[in-house]
Image 1: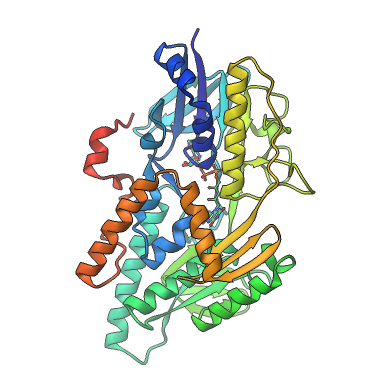
Image 2: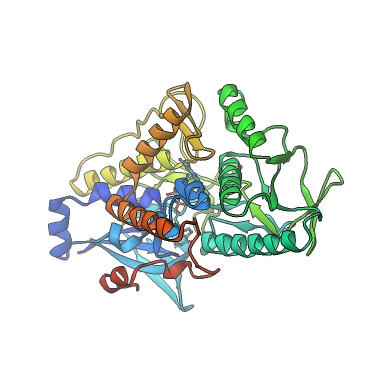
Length: 433
Ligand SMILES: Cc1cc2nc3c(=O)[nH]c(=O)nc-3n(C[C@H](O)[C@H](O)[C@H](O)COP(=O)(O)OP(=O)(O)OC[C@H]3O[C@@H](n4cnc5c(N)ncnc54)[C@H](O)[C@@H]3O)c2cc1C
C-alpha cells in the first residue's frame, strides 16, 4: 500500500513541511513506490512576499522572488490546479485543473497550507498583489499609470497631480508606499502622489502599543517621501476619474492598490473546522486540525495558540515557516511510528523596510532602525529564502542590466504574464501537470 502525503498550496508552510519530511530514507521509500508526496497548487511559483517592497523599488526583479515550485519540491508530484473541496471522511480532495477539468486525489496525510486571500474590496475594485497574477497585474498597471502621468505632466504641468492610492495602513501598505515613492522619484520625478487611505487613526497598528518609536520612525520617513495618509477614511465610490472617500475628499486616481490585509478562504468540507470568528482553522498543539490526526494545518489559514504567552501566532512568514517545519517533522515521526511533538516556537519579532537602509525591526521586544535593522532583516530574509543561488544570480543579472541601461525598470512584463515568469532553461527542466 502506498502512503500519500498531499499538500494544498505552494507557500511557506508547504515548502518547509516538505523540507523536513524528505530525508535520504524517505527518498528511498519514494523510489520504492511505498510513499508519494503530492503538491496541489493553483500557481507554479512559490512567492517570497517579504521582498515585494524591493521588487517595487526596482532593487530586485519580480522573477527573483517567484521561484518555480518544482525546483523546490523535486521529490514530489506537482499538480497544477485549485483545490475546491476536501472530504475528511473519504480522505480525498477535489480540484479543478488549469484547463477546467474536475479531478480528485486521495491522501493519507493532508497538509493544508493554502494561506489567505486579499480582503474583499468590491467598492474600490483595487489591484491585489496576492492573487494569482496579482504581482504582474500590479506592475503592468503601475507602468501604464506612471507613463500616462508623465505624458500628462509634460503636456499640462500645472494640472492637479494624480494619486496612486493604497488601501490599508499595515506593514504591506507602508512598505509598498515608501518603496513606490522611491521608485517614482528615481525614475520619473514628482509626477504623482502616493496616498494611503486608512480607516483607523494611525499606521502600523501592530506596533502602535508595543513599538511606538518604530511607528514614529515610519511616519517620519513617509512625511519625507510626501506620502499623504487619509485617516478615518474609506473609499465609498470609485469612478473612472478616481475615488471618493468617506470624509468627502476626492482623489484623482486610476491605480488603487488593495493592501488592507488578508482573510481566510476555507475550503468546503473543512468549514466545520473553522470555528473561530475569523474563519481560520483551529489546530491542537501538534498542529493537527481539531479532531483529525492526519490533517495538518499551518500558516495564515490556521489559528494556532502561541506556545508561549497569550493569544494566537501572528500571520506572517516566519510563523508559517516554523509551523510548516513542525508539521513536516511530525508527519515524518508518524511514518516512523513515533508520537508527534508539540509546536514550541517562542517567536522572534517583526521587520519592515521603508526604503534602502530604512529598516525597522523588533527583535525579542527590542527596537532597531536604520541600516542596522535593514541589514539584519536582509540577513534573515536571505537565510529563509528557499532558492538562494537563483536569487543571487537573478539579482546579479539585474545589476548588470541596470548599469547597461542606467535606469531601473520593472522589466517589460505585462499583466497576466506571471505564469510565464520562468526562464527557458527552467522550463525545459520542469514539467507542469
Ligand atoms: C505583499 C506582502 C508582503 C508581506 N511581507 C511580509 C514580511 O515582510 N514578513 C513576513 O513575515 N510576512 C510577510 N507577509 C506575510 C506572509 O507572506 C504570509 O504570512 C505567508 O505567506 C503565509 O504563508 P502560508 O504558507 O500560510 O501561505 P502562502 O505563502 O500565502 O501560500 C499559500 C499557497 O496556497 C496556494 N493556494 C491558495 N488557495 C489554493 C487552492 N484552493 N488550491 C491550491 N492552492 C491554493 C497559493 O497559491 C499559495 O501557493 C507578506 C504578505 C504579503 C501579501
